[in-house]
Length: 178
Ligand SMILES: CC(C)(COP(=O)(O)OP(=O)(O)OC[C@H]1O[C@@H](n2cnc3c(N)ncnc32)[C@H](O)[C@@H]1OP(=O)(O)O)[C@@H](O)C(=O)NCCC(=O)NCCS
Image (cartoon, rainbow, N blue to C red; front, side):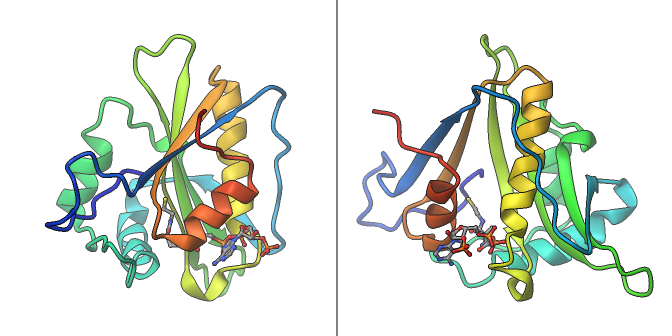
């Protein structure tokens, strides 16, 4: 994910607590599913639901990520050269009576990279839906999209203090490059 926590006054400018993790895709990824959950691309009319989820999912992290408004979403997503709504995946609860946005992740295909490289941005799961495998499902869909677009190396930027995220990515095979 793109990191937006401010460095502390004692932190050197090289941001040593930002962690870069990588995973090579050697074979087509296995796509996972979660009962009662549908994964599909972002639609413009879902922006408010996305922003509400973002505010809840990143609340309380240290270093903090402040909530986004529509302008932030434009700056961080739609204004970027890599933006494609097809690569911004949303996990919706399937219950027809009460659809709920449960999670999201965005694939960035780095422009001009050869061989093609991708990045995992803004992975999030609603606090009440964590530890049920949803992030793993989202990541599997992202990896399949990456594979289909010719990406064979994925990277993610996270923060060493974000223990859930670090544990999650390590569990999914993402490693620091030697
Ligand atoms: C990181 C995050 C996306 C994980 O979502 P999740 O749906 O709970 O993750 P999963 O249930 O798919 O977890 C898969 C595995 O990752 C590891 N893992 C996930 N959360 C963990 C935690 N809090 N502590 C330790 N291991 C964890 C476990 O090995 C887990 O498997 P298990 O539950 O069978 O032990 C979620 O905690 C979140 O939204 N955090 C806030 C936002 C954030 O930090 N995003 C990442 C930015 S880079």
